[in-house]
Amino acid sequence: MKKAKWIGLSAAAGAMATLALPVSAQTGAMPADAWAWRATAYLWMPAIKSTTQLDLPDGGTISESTDTTFSDILSKLKFAFAGTLEGRRGPWSFLGDAQYLNLGGLKSNVHSISGPTGIVTVPIDTGSRSNLKQFLGTFEGGYAVLQTPGARADILAGVRYVGVKVELSWHLSGPTGGLAIEGGVEKTINLFDGVVGVRGNTSLGGNWDFRYYADAGGSSSRFTWQGLAGVGYNFKGGDVELAYRYLGYDFHSGPLSDLKLFGPQITVGLKF
Image 1 (spheres, one colour):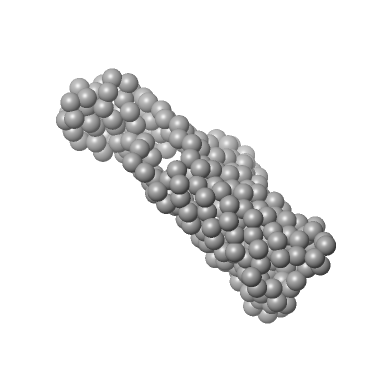
Image 2 (cartoon, one colour):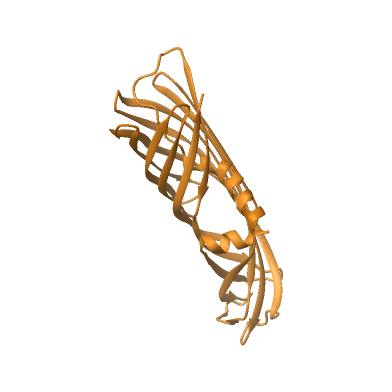
């Protein structure tokens, strides 16, 4: 079962890789009339932290937080998929990325309940669980402000979409403000944000290079930013990369107040 999950994660990863927001491993200028393509697959090993506040059917809210390591994700993974395609022509480039993640039975911590009257109680959580379904999609266009035989840097702009569905099943004891000690509730959030940023690579000598990516933006969310830094090794027709990646969201007041994913990532790229 775990083997299947590893395969699923890698494929997802493989695909997921693309969320890595790949950087072209190719250095130097390209012919102005030629398209250069890169597709990647990767294994991202993030921890996930999130805080949600969900409306209760009879009024009031219930607030919970999830703090999940990569090993937790591996054991709770139901399905994952991600993919990215990058195209370049002269100084211009574009990047399309899509990622889907479905996790079930994550350990959650219910830390407050607000009833219809506004009374807040802090119950004892005896085993609440949550399911998380998440889709991230990014489309960006870029323009090279630096192109030399040993380095390239692009400025970029685009849009990122996040769709999150949280399903909470609570199990409580102690004061619950009139809420049943067991129950469930779910919420779906869909947000669009504009982002601007920079990405690039610098030769370290031989087939090695240093790669970086950073973006920031907002609109539906209060603020979102992403960063990646790593080392790549280039070979004929492709490359491999080891990097650390962070993706964070700070939302406006609402059901999802924050979301963070961070951890190491291994990427394999194919150039054609």
